Image 1 (cartoon, rainbow, N blue to C red):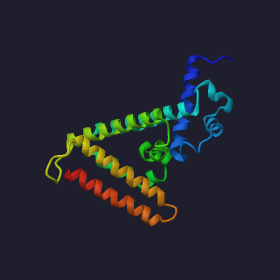
Image 2 (cartoon, rainbow, N blue to C red):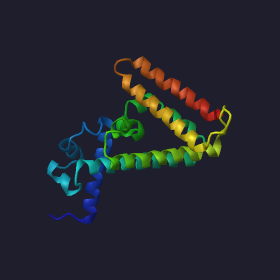
Image 3 (spheres, rainbow, N blue to C red):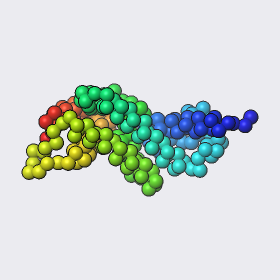
Amino acid sequence: MRLTKKQIIENRKRIVDAAAYLFRRDGFDAVGLADLMKSAGFTHGGFYNHFSSKDALVEEACRASFDSYTTRLAASLDASPEHFAKALKAYLSLAHRDDPGNGCPTASLVADVQRQSACVQAAFAAGLNTYAAILGKHLSKSLPIADAGSRKATTRERSLRLLSEIVGAMMLSRAVKKHDPALSKEIINASRAHAAAESLSGT
């Protein structure tokens, strides 16, 4: 039976959504096309009806991961300034640490993306810029931006610094959680305390 244009679009989205989850959970290289297509509810042979290569899917899934995550974040922060502190707390949590497939694509994909094509890196960079812009919007709206040093940090600098700190903490916490769960939790708690203090003080 011939598929309608709507069905083709819906099927492609199912594949991208499955890939976005699996890539965040397991990494780009660890996910084979057969398992990916099975997860989406299709046979392996149907993959090339939608994508020219796995690299093309990786690029689209990377963009989709950021689009979904940053859209939800922006909506939450726009709803109320107090959601900023709640978002930081939720990010720097054991629940987020233990669910990379549904979590922040920055922390989940960053280790793999450096070994991907320029197109995939471009998708990642675009998502990172969107993420930083969302943070910067709310830093400038509700929080002071003066640095403790000799000059004032720009909102862009502060948003990139905050993003780097929370992503780095999440990556480190995940890296040691099986061997040293106490250290993993300590990293989360230390970063959460620092991020909360910085958000309130602007230092």
